[in-house]
Image (tube, rainbow, N blue to C red; front, side, top):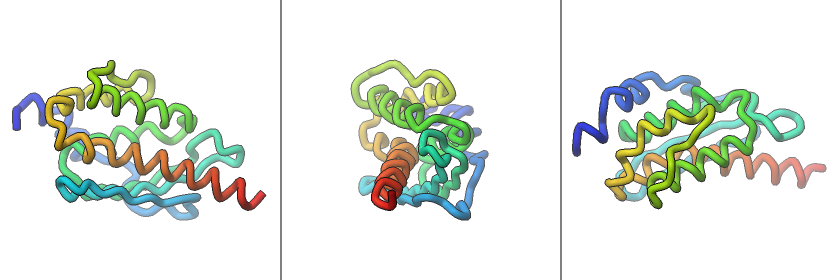
Length: 149
């Protein structure tokens, strides 16, 4: 793989992932697996009472450097983010990788460091795992809360 793909910032992010470990009292936990490379990322989420904001996150990445870097960016910036920001970041990351879209902006702007992954389609899934898991955990929480109401 090229140095552009695994440049210093990607490696720094991958080596410094915040909020690693299970989250006590998580509303939902979701694990995603890349069938291509075997990367696995679990995300635990706790939302605010109104379900609009991430109150806490726990992550457990067993992934390549790209998956770990994306997990680090999610974990660093998710607490305090609105669920809409999480979904928008996931969608922008996917568009950046698959459609040549602009990198995400706002609190998840560091995802721009993964722009080189667009040229390596087999790496797209592992790069998306954390954001896909977070969005599914949010949706699971919303469903469970709606059912309980």
